[in-house]
Length: 153
Image (cartoon, rainbow, N blue to C red):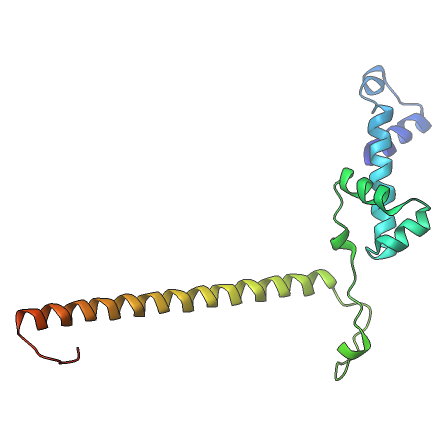
């Protein structure tokens, strides 16, 4: 939309040149930008609620989903978490200035940390199993050679 605004300013001021007219966006390009702008604002107003967005825009949900996909928008990015009553028991009320993006980043960070901890636990488990296997092999070898009998290593 900024390209269009730039051309509109030149047109209003009467400063359009032959070169700028040649690079003026095509109707299809303008239409695509306008569609993306419309659907982005629609999702923002509806907080990612596709049923509400379809009712407001008076288009069917399947078509709305196609347009969201076509314009490469992510409906999840516009969603706002609204807790259910049973989720709010013992929860401190938070004002509307809460940064949803920061909360999502924190959740992703926590999930990454938990995954890394799980991987570390799994790695340690594998190391213990390998160490026990080597000990068992060593004990078997020593028993076979007659060095020890029934001794736990």
